[in-house]
Figure 1: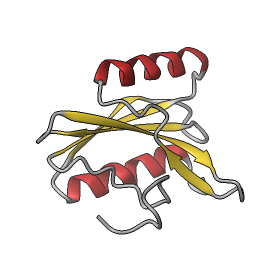
Figure 2 (figure 1 turned 120 degrees about the horizontal axis):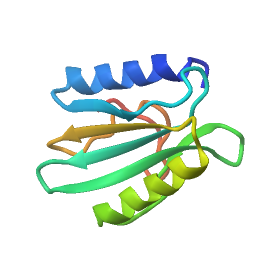
Figure 3 (figure 1 turned 90 degrees about the horizontal axis):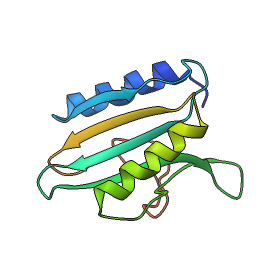
Amino acid sequence: MLLSTDVWVSALIRRAELEGAFATVVRKGDARAGDVVIKAYDTANRTARLFSQSVDMQGEPLWIQPVASPNESELDAYLERRRGYDPDLWVVEIEDRYGRHFLLEKVEGEGPAKPF
């Protein structure tokens, strides 16, 4: 990330809020270089997805779904494990009626980044 994590997270939350979603920081990590995990909650279907920072084969930034489960307890268990070994981790929760994540960067399985 070229921006510090706290600035990047603030921009993500602002994008979500401008589109009518609710977003909040559940856990703050290192302000300059902490990893971020996003929990996107679809309020209409009552499902959630996790997105975690990664890099692709060319070293480009990429967001992946580390747990591909519709079971929210499995997503929360993953977050607990990550918190246990990554004290700099940020966790951002977004609640949106369409389940959008508001990421502008490339997301695995979604093709090129596109506006929401």
